[in-house]
Image (tube, rainbow, N blue to C red; front, top):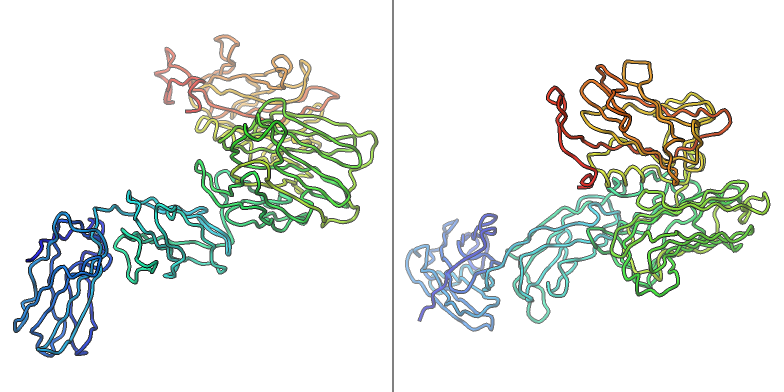
Length: 640
């Protein structure tokens, strides 16, 4: 008795390849070729459907007058056998059908063509009978471009709710990984080829695991191919540390442990894993996951030394910590490096999220701990511990996500420099990153900018942090050791020093023009302690030499060195917020410029950061005359 079958394939498979496969070779006559229009190898057919059976001869040869069709089930039992004897063969057979309760598994459909009793051609199609399966939604690559010989993590999102799904990964048609979806084979770690180029990564999804632990010798009907890019030259990511020439050591952890810094002071060429660091993606961040027993190590000293003297530096790390509350009461080690003479630097993390550091030298032990928690569990955080070394002492400064949060100053007992193995630039020693803290480590580096005269903070970090904080409302952000080439200075002594812009006595610095619309601009300037009248911001408009507003820093400076004030821009006027309704300037203008002026005859002015953000104001009575779009915006929703 014949069994009814329904032939159903996924719409995606039908759209991509249909159910037609061509065969141009077989057993028997060499001049015979047959085109079979039926289920393809690797296709998925659901219970209760039918399989169409059609065929045609591509070349004429001997008269073919017998066709045997055999359907075999998962246990090799013959389910259906059809024999057709006609001259010539009709080119079709009635569809084969399976019942609704057909067993799931791998089936086989074999076609044998005969000329009388002699076999001329045979072909077999293996396919799956299974409940409906989805496709492969996407494959994500971390990082997008791999380094030659470096590691990469590939995550697939598939519509496969069954624990039986079997995944097979291939790189340039060579199988590199295969296993069950339930065992985590949606994600694999790949070691990139040593040669640069574009390779093909392929993922196939099979409904069931192959029997006897053997692989399938045919391609799945559910397949996705993506290019795998391998290149030594790579663009920096959105949050990555840049300016490789300004780092003493720089590790992006993009699947490799190579130092990406481009400086003659490099002492660490490559890190060596300790324990079991693994590539991982957590909270959308790609990096190395380290448990509390894993780390990266190097047999060298990781801090910059020039002519045997320890230089100013900044230890920068981006990470997501886990399990802080269970790490005990003592500080856990994040970073440690020491030279052969005993000089060492330690950075640690307390369970409550406070950062601590310790520098040991011949001149003493210098300790620092942030007064408040700054790192939080499961939250991506970028920290920078800056050590600025001068003749009289050193300053330790902590930046978190680009913001200066704490600072301590230490004075030496004598005027000696911090000597380390004098004359030896390539220092032996020991360095360890990680251990004791469970975390996802995204980046780590020791910043040292030679071109900025030993500046120790990456200027891009503050700007990036402000872009993330304020988005489209950010107009201008400059901080840390920025380049002063875009500024107009009145004194050649204006410079970058100690992560600040130094304005000499009776000098001024002019900043780039701002071009606001109908809105309020809030200025936040972080500076050192000032007396009234020492420093001021002076504003002027494009095309006019006269000043339109002056803001005395000393009269409004807060205890933390912050100077904050606002300007309100209307259609034809500029108002200083809080000064009354009278405009400080009236007339047409296209932009506004400003300079910071040092009025003191003796004291230098230190500017640590400048931030300008937009704050759209409410509609006024005469706003209809404005050429600018008007929106209601409050400070509370600036982050949205």
